[in-house]
Length: 90
Image (tube, rainbow, N blue to C red):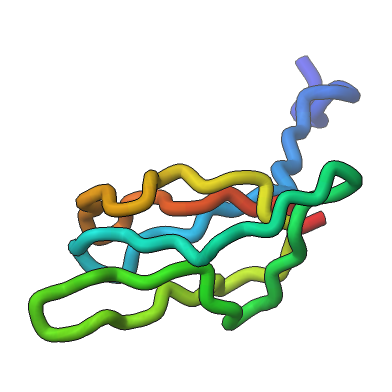
């Protein structure tokens, strides 16, 4: 039996998720719908805010890519580490 993968067995996932840095209520920034392509997000760009008792910190994207979709609804209570948005990075 060969230890080399057969063509089609390797999975390269060019997608990432942006996760909540803390628990709170998620407030996404408005996304401009473009039928031609997904909105572009740069590394460090703010995708929304978390409403916390002590303030409203931004939620930055650690990745650059195309915003495929939001995984949390506006006003949804999220926990730390919960996926908020989905990016295609390649």
